[in-house]
Length: 135
Ligand SMILES: Cc1cc2nc3c(=O)[nH]c(=O)nc-3n(C[C@H](O)[C@H](O)[C@H](O)COP(=O)(O)OP(=O)(O)OC[C@H]3O[C@@H](n4cnc5c(N)ncnc54)[C@H](O)[C@@H]3O)c2cc1C
Image 1 (tube, rainbow, N blue to C red):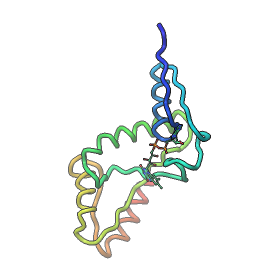
Image 2: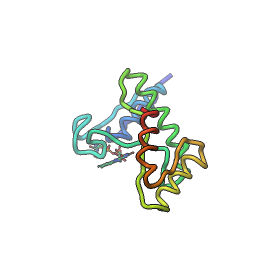
Image 3: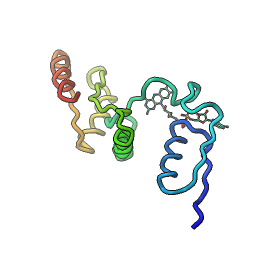
Image 4: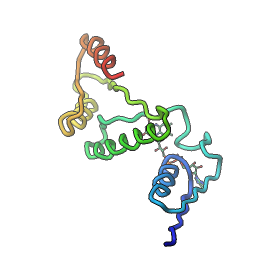
């Protein structure tokens, strides 16, 4: 059987993931990058990226984010390195802000993720408690 040959143009975030998944499915893949791999001129450049399930933009993203988490954990396992570091997250906003309400709904109500909304003086205690349990 002839293995399909695939060329991926650009080996940044998406291109690198595409190359890895195509190769894992048994195809010959070549990634073409105009700079070096891991260069500092792309969207992927920098020390870190945030990942969050409490996704304000729309709850429909949550299943995709869950899948992304699985794939990130798989990278941790395959490399033996903590490339993806699961930690708790905090949104701070004025009382009643849509931002927090929608993110909370996305995470908690719709998909059963542990999220909570706290206010005023309770914030400090609640955050310390939550973060110490999530680390
Ligand atoms: C400052 C900043 C902060 C961000 N923070 C977050 C965050 O917290 N969480 C999050 O999820 N996302 C974040 N993003 C978004 C995320 O980083 C990008 O969506 C993602 O990296 C885009 O991946 P990409 O493969 O499309 O682009 P890139 O990673 O830039 O890859 C494109 C690659 O294509 C190469 N290329 C382009 N043209 C050619 C060509 N003609 N021939 C060969 N190679 C070519 C480029 O050199 C580059 O390496 C952030 C982005 C930025 C800029």
